[in-house]
Length: 491
Ligand code: HEM
Image 1 (cartoon, protein in one colour):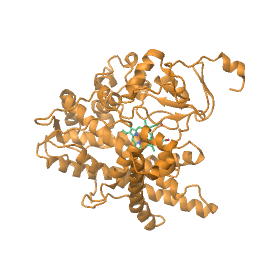
Image 2 (image 1 turned 90 degrees about the vertical axis):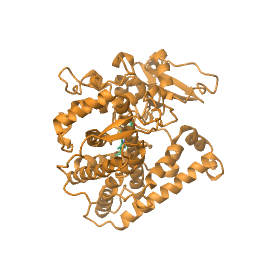
Image 3 (image 1 turned 60 degrees about the vertical axis):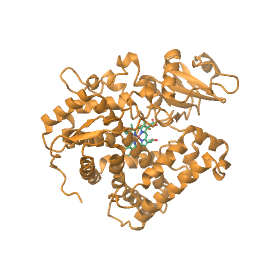
Image 4 (image 1 turned 180 degrees about the horizontal axis):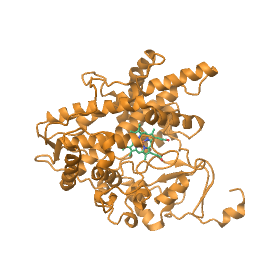
């Protein structure tokens, strides 16, 4: 906004008054989204915080968020992250500015995931195969207490399938290496660690917590790059597509052949691969885990979903064509994503230009925090936001509400705009197939002689990026495991 007169007429963004110089630095970060929601309830659905001279704008209204995020040009960048620059050479998709290369990278990922029929089929077959192993693992627990994270982590390792077209057998000592990488990177992303290293980058070479986390992350990264990336690239044969990495290699080589050089360097491919591991595997793990917890805490919802599955599918394994035939099941998944809001503050955005919203001026380079958690628990929109109630997503005929329904518009677990999650459709497809299969085969019960944690999102320890409660449970087989009408071969 160059014209000073216009800029003066704009309102000042409200927000809590902070201390001189340090600003609102004393915020209680333990349950940060909840705390932000409380500030929003007092100051409005767009407000500002000042922290050490920097302005942060928090938005917790879907309409305003749409206006700000859906414009391709105004708010698609990211704040600086130490880990992105230093672990991924600033070339990963999720934590860098949305420049020309990242736009192409995202388009490439979306094309591979959703527009390549062969790839879709490989993914679908992969899910069906690992589901079989997953169910067998659960049967082995024989109704005793077990931590669902254990089989789930093995089962989600099939993100290998997405990347390289095969899964590493459980017996392979490198089977768990991706979880190692995710664990270390999540510690590094923690704002306390990331901002300390951004301010004092030399700490990464010194003993102490930050340096230790950084070095462990690099070690885990190098192992994954060596075993997945390097080995796969060395065995790539032009024309043969085994998974997402091969599509990237093909694009890289085709462009090199055509023009003599390519923007799609190995660093970009490695960055993309890491995003898929970090964003994909951990988010899916959280979603599956929380869904099971909710089903155990709400046995009436579990029963209703099972009845629907029995009526519609009987003993047949679910297929994607069954999506619309199981509205209640869909509603339980949507309500889980709303209620838990497992990615509570999404990934912060940064304005690439001055933006005027609702009469407020937001200056270029201001960081915008979308409080999805706050949006999903707004009393005015949802009425009873703290109840897990799948029926809210159904109409009077038991059908899923249409996408233009006001509740659907306020339901944004994958965020919105050009930077929305590219894994949305993939995740919804996966959650549908996996959770349907699980409820078809098993009834999930609380553990014996142990307390089940509450699924109430107001109680989560929100050490960023939110580690929800871990728990043990029991699973009782309901019937012989579903017969598979679709998988041709599960090697
Ligand atoms: C239940 C599962 C998931 C949830 C709730 C979720 C949620 C989100 C959210 C809220 C964002 C931030 C969007 C923004 O900045 O406005 C995001 C970004 C992202 N997600 Fe997901 N996600 C899930 C699964 C996945 C999966 C399976 C993949 C991988 C295939 C994935 C890949 C990504 C990537 C690459 C980004 C960064 C996009 C960009 O910066 O342009 N996510 N996700």
